[in-house]
Image (tube, rainbow, N blue to C red; front, side):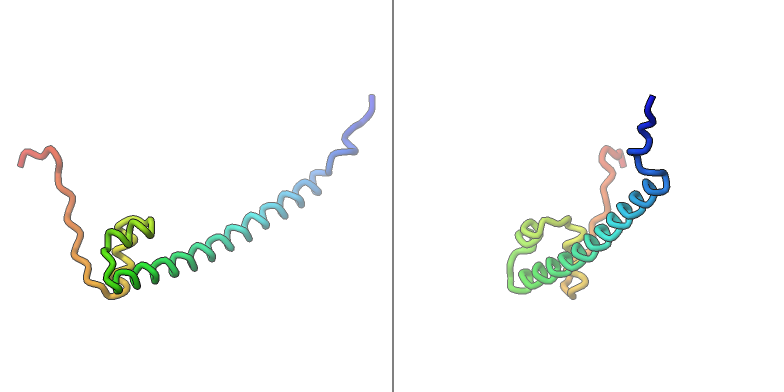
Length: 95
């Protein structure tokens, strides 16, 4: 019988390769987070500019593709008046 383990990387080498691969994943994740944060700022600025120009809020929010919560937080942060959210109703309540 021949010993075919000589073709396999050692455990130390395998751990080194895994550590390098994981470091690459971590760098990519940090890069992704930076890019997304930049794009969120750009989108928020564009959306608030559109509202400031007179575009209907619903139209802007739909075009931006964000949730109402996110959109109205952008408007509030930009100094636009935003009414308080209505409390959830109790559906099926007998009161």
